[in-house]
Structures are given as structure tokens and as C-alpha cells.
Amino acid sequence: MKSILYEQVARIGKALSSPKRLEILELLAQSEKTVEKLADSAHLSVKLASAHLKALREARLVEARRDGKYIHYRLSSDDVAQLLVHVREVAQEHLLELRVALDQISGAPEQLSSETRVSLLAKARAGEVVVIDVRPPDEYANAHLPCARSMPLEELRQRIGELPPGKPVVAYCRGPYCVMSDAAVKLLRREGITAYKLSDGIAEWRANGLPLEH
Image (cartoon, rainbow, N blue to C red; front, side):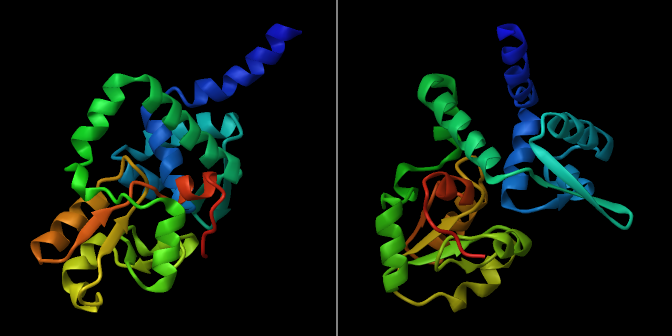
């Protein structure tokens, strides 16, 4: 009986054992997406993306719905996104190779916001800092950090004039492995704007029990 129980639990581990499946879960933590959009974002063929989604669906980590000729996928519940965050945090705590790789993609240390989540939220609500969400608009519409403005990376250069002068900007995207916020910070700093990256995404915010807006 114990073996049967562990076998069932191992289904989750098996589903998480692929780097691309972890990436797909991160994408779905942002918003519901079609197979075609997931394939494009994860740089996969539609056939291979469908195979990964089948494995995730068999482990009950994702759900699907059909809308005409398109199939839309979403996480089966918020606890799947929290599981992804916790797995990543454990890996970062124990794997030196991961910490080194993360340092390499995170840019200079001064580009990371030193604010705590609570203090950042307080300053954003008080108008002391400007928080921008550089993800695609559909992901922002699904859920975003409180007081965050939607300024997708591809639109940022043309919309810099919308930012209040003299106020620091904190940019975030899909989480610590997402480099869109790094690109945003570099762009803003070249324009003379004080800017920092927030390594959190909405999954990290939710996993820590903080509010989101929809």
C-alpha cells in the first residue's frame, strides 16, 4: 500500500521532471493560453508542446477547454503555481550551479530592487515609486501586482514619456528567470531614469500571501 501511495505522489515529480514543462507551467501561471501560443513562447513545435501538455494534464496539473478550433490550457489551481515557486526556491537553496546561472542572467546586483514586498507595496500605493508590468497585456489583465501599470516591453521605448518624472521605476515580469524586466531596466537607465528589477512575478507574490489585482 505504501508503494502505491508513493507511486501516486511520484506522478507529480515525473510531470515536473522536464525543463520545458516547468517553463510551460510558468507561462500558464501568468494566464490561460492556447497550445499555439505556448509553443511559440516556449520555442517548441505545436506537436511537442501538445505532448508536454498531455503529461501535465495526466498529472492533473493543468486543465483544458475547447473554444472553437482552439484548445486553451490553464493551471488546475493556484497551488500549482505555488508548487512551482517552492520547487524553484528549494533548487536555488541547494544547487550552487543554479545560483551561479541565476546571477549571470540577473544583471548587476544594483539592478535588483532591495525593497521587501511589503515596503514596495506601501511605496507604490503612496506614489513614491512607479511599478511597471512589462509582460504582454493579456497576462497583465489576468492578474498583476497592486498599483502596477501595464507597459509591455515592446511598447516601453515609445511610452517612456508616460512615466512621472523624478520617480524611481521598478519593473517586473514573469519571475526570477524572466529577462524582460532586465531589458526594461537597461532601456530606462539609458534614458536617465532610475530603474530597478523586481525578481518576483505574480506567482511569487501569490505564494507569499500578498494581494493581486485583476
